[in-house]
Length: 177
Image 1 (cartoon, helix red, strand yellow):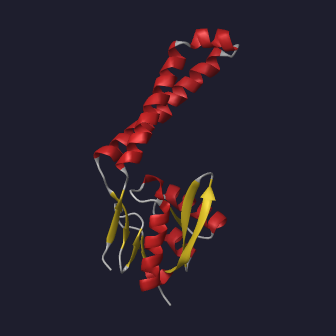
Image 2 (cartoon, rainbow, N blue to C red):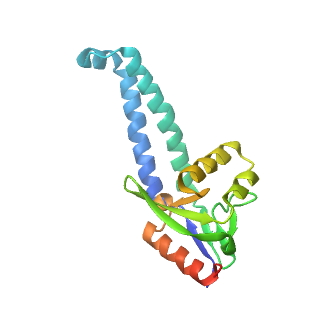
Image 3 (cartoon, rainbow, N blue to C red):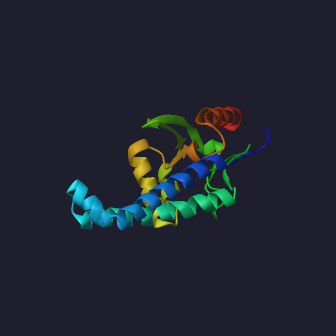
């Protein structure tokens, strides 16, 4: 089998971009119309302004992330005969050999399917992570899902079912017996 590269989805980036624009516009509207909204809803104007500013800042940041994702399609996942690369753009990358993978579990949070990559020594990956935020995220994943790694197809060009099918095909062919 050949190496499979899975990219970030342009369509999903467009949806994120449109959603961010809408919420930034709502935040601006809240700031511009604070007094009218406060009178009609009998709310504190400070709270309305705060919500407006938070919406502009947060969704403004999301706008730039979506724009960056839209302009640059990047490889998000590599599935190869040697193993699974969960973050190919990172140096050093999170490359997991098939022998280190026990299997895959699927969980559903709201309507989002997430694949959990079960590895033999989860603590090894946490100890080797340089980024403190990512290390804490991995510890959270271990405590809740017994694995530091999970994959969501939400931002990928493939569906969750296609991703699961491909991962199992490679795992069955190259994983430890």
